[in-house]
Image (tube, rainbow, N blue to C red; front, top):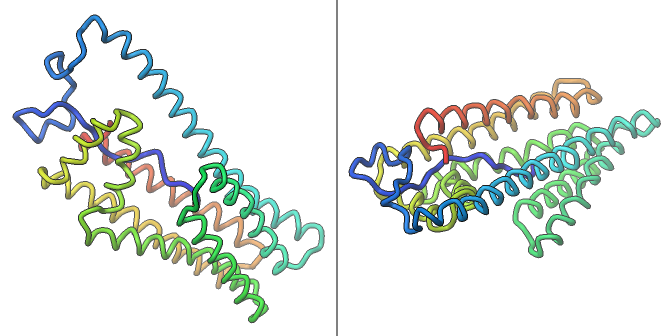
Length: 258
């Protein structure tokens, strides 16, 4: 489950006398501090930086799909095709994602909560399966991560920093700079409609993760073991596509898109 996320809501523009239209207002010459003659020179680096960030985001998404989804899935079916037991193939294919997670933390130079949490769940599920000898326990293990993440996301609704507000800020900052991101963030304190929109998006994402976790448990307990890894991967892509589809429709419809 690697990375949520280059998608999120938000915008930051010059304040206007009409708060309800500030989300979609275009900056005016009077609202900028840069002289008109300098605008083309300033816009070129910004456009280049935006393209570079978009390309980096696409690379990160592709890498996540390959190493966090494709590699374990392909490894499982390769190992079972070579005659390995389903239980052993599930254990080994689950471990294949570990080097990628460790590499990511080493590259960024810090220990991150989500990769460590995922590694702990992998280890706990493997130990439980050693006790029970059940491959289905390993299959249910994947639902723990999505279930806990879903509960955590929903839990942030009770705070002044819902998940979507925090997650979106970094993306807004990457697109329009720290100053613009702070203006966007300040809308949380002044616009009730904006708060409602952010909470609704947070609730949808949290509910989506919980739905995925429930589906995984049902599949793990009812489907043939050999079919579960593939079906789980496909249903996760469907759930994720639905979440992204709603997210982009909602932020576009409500003028939240940067």
